[in-house]
Length: 265
Image 1: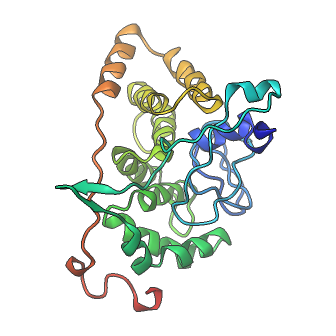
Image 2: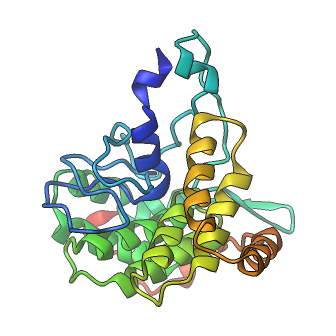
């Protein structure tokens, strides 16, 4: 049964609280799921101790399929294919398609991800940081994760929120619920239920009908229950006005000669 592959609990971990990351004690009262032995590349949800989606095989891997509601009944239904949950997409400028593929290769994203998967944060986080500084959305999301958990860097919720929000503003689906969670709990900034609701509303609007979408709606309802009608209306308007602002991948020739260490090329 497809649902066995991504349970409702796992889905929330996938959708609302940053990926589980290499062996580390869970932080008490955190909005993001506590880390487990292996991380999931595109994960981001709200329930603390929940199993997470299977670890991704590569940096910026395609997201898992979604789960049809009928799967909850045991019906043999196929998974829902969607690109709605992608974090890294091609950017079209004047009809020219630009991708992050070459910069990922130059920057050593694959060996960095492999190192990260085994808990080598000293070797991996600086590489993610270089890619994040030039606007790579998945690298920005990962910087949100490492600052949240203090992986190879001092734990810093403000920096975590900064990077998660940069990724979310580009349309990185995996960052939406993480940003919402941090604003909801006042981690990295003053608690802001309006922003928490807004980012969950944006996430909900991106998904087709599915178990994953229903889980986000449930989390949005928990935030909504704490808000006034006026706050809800304002947050809805802000989410409806939201437009993704993807960063155009820079030309490697425009970067400093030694921006990416040669050993990673």
